Amino acid sequence: MRKEIHRHSTRTQTDATDIAGNFVHPEARRGRGARSNESGRYEAASKTAFDDGWGHIDDEPPPLRTTLIRDASRTIIATNTSPDVPFSQSINPYRGCEHGCIYCFARPTHAYLGFSPGLDFESKLLIKPDAASLLTQALRHPRYRPQVIAMGTNTDIYQPADRTLGIARQILDVLHAFRHPVSIVTKSALILRDIDILSDMAARNLVHVSISVTSLDRHLARRMEPRAATPARRIDALRQLHDAGIPTSVMVAPVIPAINDTEIEAILTAARDAGAQMAGYILLRLPLEIKTLFREWLEEEFPDRAAHCLNLLRDMRGGRDNDPEFHRRMRGTGPYADLIASRFALAARKLGLKTGEGAFDLDLSQFRVPPQAGDQMELFSV
Image (cartoon, rainbow, N blue to C red; front, side):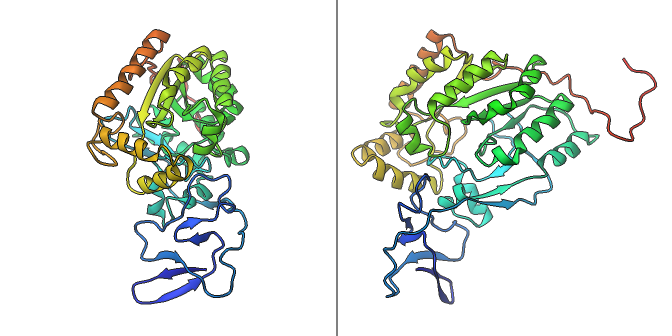
């Protein structure tokens, strides 16, 4: 039973997934990343488990299933002005992500929707089936001025739901028709489904793809990113994209001290051998609810290293769990952060991998609004 405590009243509600406090029974969360499902920080109610005397609190619950919820957003292009982010426009056709990466910095955004950043984030997904039509409207607006659109910046556009929904491909169809440049970040081999569109856009210098590789150890990757593609499939995706003429890079993200930081050089080498031309990295961030969710995961998966990992992170964050300051939040500070930066830079230089912004400057000049049914053709064309 779950007890929801309100400001002026109490009520009980059966929930097979809440077993002990906010922790969720292992069988219910099999194949998921988070260990708990605490209410979002904006909710008026909190949850706690208790024994109601019926003797079912220890029963094995059914597995947690994914629910798709229609997002009624009326716009699709989001803008940002962060000085340490190399894009000003982005598209996120999904809110929440079934990959279930325990470290995902987007988890706290689910609280804005009334959901938990824990298991709700990876099992209650908001989808935008009208994304392509909304994008078409935005690009046709007379005041629109093209800037590179980034995709996969918040949640993965190629998560499992897109196998059937195909929203990512619909968006790419629109961008292709408008000859609009796009930069994609993903950890899914599903991107190979759209290699035909991507290769044609690449021939016009309109696309760049970055594959995120957190570890080459498939067992570690499965524990951190339970429903994402295996490391081998991601490296193979890099190879196939490169062979199709698509400029690619690898993101070693996030770097987690005492967990995967020893793999930086190996990941860069494997990616370079697969055809990657550029590389980047991001140090693990623990904003808001992520610090609790990550600690729960870490103490269960790596009890022998948990304290050491967290102490190293705090050393790189000025003694705190998280440092939100621009330019510091992605890299950290202090001796250990400097060591990671030096190792990455040295390995990238030896392997001939480009680093830094501007390594792939996409072409904005080709943008054009394609004719639609009913448009009057121009008398003269160039």
